[in-house]
Amino acid sequence: LSALLGVSRTTTINAYRQLEEQGLICTRVGSGTYVADLGPITKTPPAVPWSQLFAPSVNIQLPSILRELIYSAAAKDSISLAAGMPDPSLYPLNDFAQFFTSQSSFLDGADLGHTPTEGYTPIRNILSTMLTEKGYGITPENTMIVSGSQQGLYLIAKVFLQPGDYVIVESPTYLGAIQLFSNSSARILSLPSSGPLPFDLLEDYLIRYRPKLFYVMPTFQNPNGRVMPLEERRELLRLAAKHRLVIVEDDPYGELFYEEKPPLPLKALDSYGGVIALGTFSKMLFPGLRTGWVVAPEPVINRFALEKQYIDLHSSNLSQRLLYDYLHQGLLDNHLALVRTEYKKRRDFVAGALKRYCSPHLTFSIPAGGFYFWCSLTQDILTRQLLHEASKTGVSFVPGEAFYADASGAHEFRLCFVTQPEERLLEGIKRLSKALQVLQTA
Ligand code: PMP
Image (cartoon, rainbow, N blue to C red; front, side, top):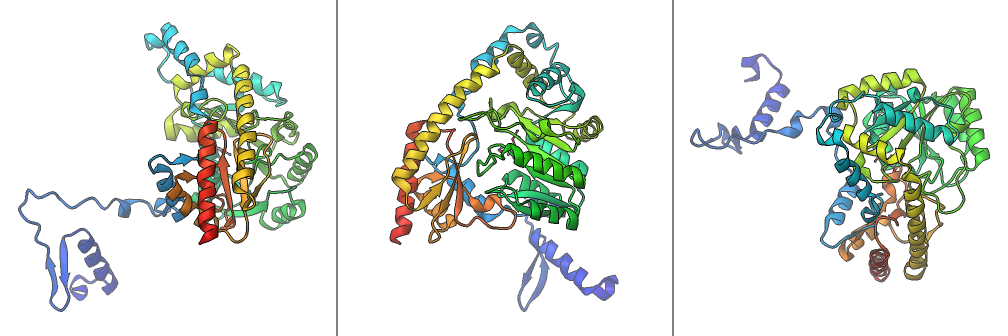
């Protein structure tokens, strides 16, 4: 057939394989290949081979550990200590419901058309004022509203990265950033982040690889909760200015502090102008708003806006309008005071319960803010095994490996202490303790 068609043998074999996968032909060993019996013409056509149609760049397998996590979290009566979500019972829904029903412009739809890609102008103004009060030297033109800071990160990757570019990340770091940078075919350089930044290694990376970006969470790092001290922030900025390094500062948890206020963000300390800042209302209020922001020099914002148009034209006008009313009425501060008090109680409660039920198998430090305990297991226990047992006892967490670009983290995991009320947290930790005991006696 190859000779007849004038194509190579491999092409013919591949064509046969595809026809077979689509159920159009069948092969019998020793007998040959036949056109399949497709039955009467009314028979349902073979399913569309969707995964074969995906572009190669998106056709990647979800790592098995994450699949395991998703299944275990979905199990009946499982307690999820995995997702990084605020407690839904603390969402300020009454305020949002009241704004929605009390405004005539919502009720007659007048204000629910399109809004500028960069964001609803009043919310950009109020955000710029809020951030200026925190020390950012910016104007509304330096801000852009995005559909969650995840979208901001996506825009950064899209606008700055091409395959093969180097990006520096902390190690461990936010899972969503690792996935996104990998998806952009960037090469990831890991910088240890459990203690002070290793500036020698960072400078070595800067000289040797000329990385495009350094993605960093200086305040309540996800997952390890670390806060970079002020002097370290200054040192990082000095080095960045020297090497013209672009820093992406991600700060979703900065307002969720349970001890003293954290140091100023890098963006507020940045005099050389190379910091792009990401923020979000997902952790302070609720993630379903899908409202976050990017702060950057104006030409960069303009480029992001162009790119964002291709994705969604603009972020939800409804969310932006409701959020504007909420901020304009000055309600955020009271809400933050409320959740700080509640989450601090839960943090201390979980620390006590982990010590009581899970030591000496795991160690952790107490985070001064944010949502997570970052736990280390003793060397004889693998997180992967614990996750497997925990899914049977009905509790889930995020295994450490998800937070590393280089497959470290085999003995670490992240627990979120804010989403569940105390009695569920306690039950979750007891289940975790049961899973640990199974591993110890195995
Ligand atoms: N960055 C970090 C560090 C996060 O933890 C998260 C949420 N888990 C995000 C970005 C994305 O948040 P969102 O898109 O909801 O604003």
